[in-house]
Amino acid sequence: MGGASRREITQRAAHSAEVAYQTRRAALAGQEAELAAERNRLARDLHDVLAHTLGALSIQLTVIDTRARKADVPDPLLTQIGRGTELVGSGLEEARQAVRALREDDTPLPAQLERLCTLHRADLKITGEVRGLEAQATLALYRVAQEALTNAAKHAPGAPVTVRLVHGPEEAALTVHNAAPDPGAPGPLHTSGGGFGLAGMRERVLQADGQCSTGASEDGGWTVTARIPYRRRLR
Image (cartoon, rainbow, N blue to C red; front, side, top):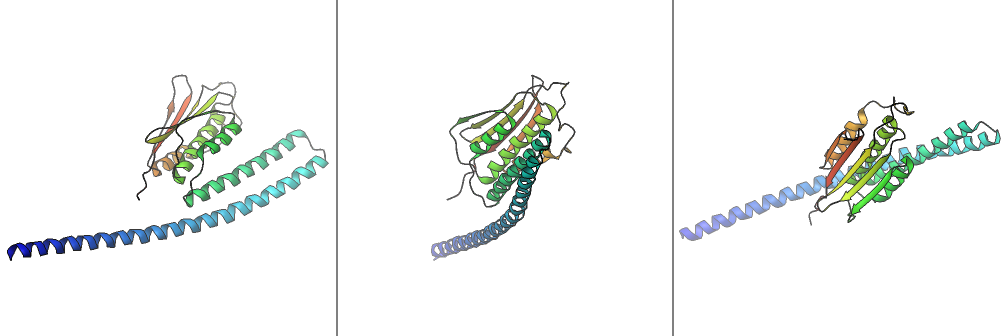
């Protein structure tokens, strides 16, 4: 009787533990569903505001460009109008990336880096077996490359810039390096910015469970490195 009583107590304890576990699991599932719904709502709002506003701005710039060409305005002004059109297009693409990140859709990082490096005339090399990264990690690495390339244009205009993306067995590592700047050639953007880009870059990487480091290199240039592990998804 004593043995049967102990087994019954053990079974009841195990059953209670299982019920408690399933209850917590159901609560977490509900919280995740609510979070996903909120992220989707934010994604819709972001898309509606930015896509519509930037789309309208793009149309206005096209009209201005057409009228300017008919009026035979100076070439520098046409160049600035064209640059504005490019920035609007870039802003639209970044808005789409932000929406995809909120919706947790996978995005192809190599293609994004290729476009970015072409714009900044940086040398890009991708090694290792390309793996799928979560949207948050993809966006974080893209923002690191974007910020690092922008800073290189500000502080080391004309200096060679290399971008390396390595897909390792456990993590993806991005390195952006610019050579030493020419002290006699300040860039047109060297006085812009308030120093918030680096902080935001590190925050994005940390939120993706990664690590980010910046610092001077031996050749007198600057190196930015971000490492983000592949997140194992529970089945």
